[in-house]
Every structure is written in C-alpha cells, then in structure tokens.
Length: 370
Image (tube, rainbow, N blue to C red; front, side, top):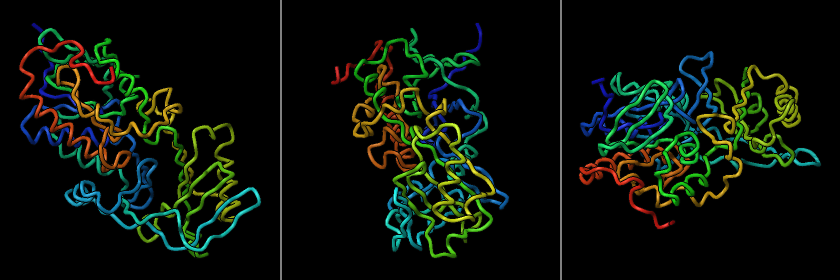
C-alpha cells in the first residue's frame, strides 16, 4: 500500500494568518503542514530590498497602529525593528484647477512601520516553524471529504490527507481556485464569492529617490488627488529618511498603457522636477495577482461582509476552518486582523477535534443563509 501523506491539520496559505495558525497548532502538539502556492511567504505582505542593509520598501501592507498588540508582540518577539510613520509637514491637494498646499497633514494617521518591511513578519514566522512544516510552490487544487471521515487535499505534487483544513486565503479566492466538489453549503459559497478581497482592486505604486527632497520643502510627502492616477500618496521613507520613497494608491481601472509615465508626470506636477526621475518605480497591481484576487475582484464591494459570522462556523462536519484577514471580527483588512483570524482558526480546530471523531456528513450542517 502506498504511503499516505497524512497530517492532523493542513493550512492553505502562508500570508500572515496561515503561519500564525500553523504556529499555534504546532505549539498545541498537532502535526501541521502549511501549503503556499507562491514561491515565497507573505501573501499581501510583499517587501522589496533596497541598497541599504536591513531596509525594504513595502508593495503591500505597510502599517500597524496603536492597540494592535498581536503585531507589536510578534515584532518584538522576533527582534523586528519598527519606527514611527513620518507625519511632519504640509499636504498637497491636486485638483483640476491645479495644486494647492494645505497646512498640516490631515490624511496620514500616527502609525508604525517595519524597517525591514512587513514581509519580515512572515519570514520570521516561517523560519520559526520546523523545516518540514512549510511547502512553497504548492497550490491546493481541490479539497474533498473522503470515505474515512477526513479531508483529501489535492495538489499538483500529489494528494495529502488531513483531519482538518484551515483556509488562510481570501474566501473569494478559495472558492475560485479550489474545487470543493459541490459539498460546501450554498449559502457559504454565496458569501465567500461576494466577500471583498482586501487590497484586491488596489495598485500600489512606490517611487524611490536619492533623498527625501520634499521634507526640505516642509512637505509631509502626503497628497491626495482628484485627477489621478494616484489618488492618495504617503511618505514611505525608512528610518531617518533612508531609503527615501513615497507611495501612492491607484485603482486597478487606472492601469493602461503609459500608466507609469502618467504616474511620474503626476508626481512631477505635484512635487516639481526632482520627482521626475525616481531611482526606482514599482507598480504592484494586486487585482492581477493570481494567488490573491479572483477574476471577479472588481465587483466585490460589500465590505459589511468582512468578518461575517458564517466564517466562525467550521464547514464539512467541523473540519474546514476559515482564516485570512477578510474573516477577522476585529481589524479586518489589517495585519492584526490576519493574525487574529489565524489564532481564531487554530482555536476552532482544537475545539472541533473534540467533536469530530465520526465520519463527515457531506456538506456538513446547513447554514442559516439557506
């Protein structure tokens, strides 16, 4: 009989919520395997290195705020340096009639950043896991109940067997990329397909410069625009302004041929000739990321569905559990929300293990939505 690749729990996704769930489950003594479709951890935590040692620029999640204790504790535990977001200076407003300078900075809130980039959080979590607990380049293509009362998890590398599965990816992505064989309750499928993907329609543009020249002019590196393509801009410089950078958000609809030239033209119009030639320009379009956003992402706009109570109910006889920041009941859309959702999913697994000794019952308990 061939060897079965069997685990107590399989976690799908190695953004922030997946490794957080895997860490908690391993600490509880469960054989837990985390699978990630990409060749890296982090998901929407994506940081690009710079020439400065131990400094990076974030193309995805950037900030954390007061009260987000899971992030703060995680950074402290792994000696990840953080620093205050630069706020000092005036703000620019770009309108059809031109550019106006506004006193102070009304659009940037006090927050903290990670010197080595937000992705350093998932790098630290993954490094702390045993070497065999994380598999990259391993997308999950199907999850099905098997005849023995467990879950069959199918990947291009072969099938795996799990007592429980944690879905640590956006629900809309899970129902788009994973074949559940029609066994999920219809109400849950409708909810998942309608739940927005955080940052799923965003394009984050980062421009790096030799120095933060805007600060010398008393500007905060903050701007908002009614003409675009960047609608909102913030200082993204590292500690003490090195590396010097700022970033802006554009909607995915704004991306068309000549987009990057339109960005530099806008920045030049806002900030003058010094902004015309950045050392580097990055445009991360999250709507086209195959392992972040489904094709329907631009139609998903009901943010009241984030943290919906149905995501707190395990499916498939109590063996399929939801994580990802979209399912968080607090701080949904933040790194803190992702960590909270991962912890909640781990607790859900531990509770459900006490009640799932029998075989699965197909679609599991019907949801109220039906």
